[in-house]
Image (tube, rainbow, N blue to C red; front, side):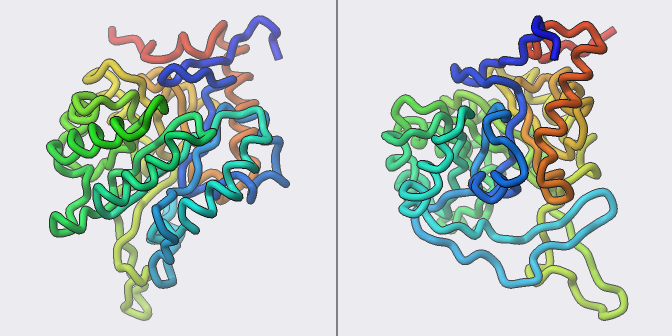
Length: 307
């Protein structure tokens, strides 16, 4: 690597060695992928969603391949905060990479129980999954109501202590900028986007839904143009950093999202097709930078030409 190339980026006051993170729900809690890559090479690891108690997730089948991506209705299965703090976080802290903990919940109280436990932990950043259904409001996702976004952001931020808080936004809304501004108004240090698009697949021979849940979250290259557009819109609507994700498969995809306005990116579905994808993408990104006169990764953020 060109010794003059500086890959470091600042994410909400936390210095990442490079802008490559893993996306929540696609990388376990890191342990599962440690045999396939050197975790020290990543800018950061975003964990699978952590809830206040273990979640069993949805019934199977809950993953289906689609043209250009995949559908998942896993249902945020996770062992809960106790196991995370006793097993997963100590494992991750062995490595020279930043740890962003994704938090999920069905009520404000559930979010806060997890965030309060993490406030005094070794986690570096918190990512709050507000695509979860708010059971007290009839099941509409927290992230689909700007007032709910601002409120849950403000209470989580108050409970997080000194931990930077990023709100993970759902694309299943009319105007992503409204949600981005609501998160910023609530005190978010940054935002992550996009979460999955709601989709469906039917087996035409069995005449049955492929997923037991009927619908699932669409991810992968098929959603990349939508994700990139929303990253661009959101980054121009707020002054806080954006982590971009949605179909990133190559190093040039990383550059594309950063040019659109992302300060860093998360690699998700690619991990399912290649467990070493994140490191491969990092090397490809370095090659892109070296071949295109890039001196610092950070200079790419928002640098798309508007003329």
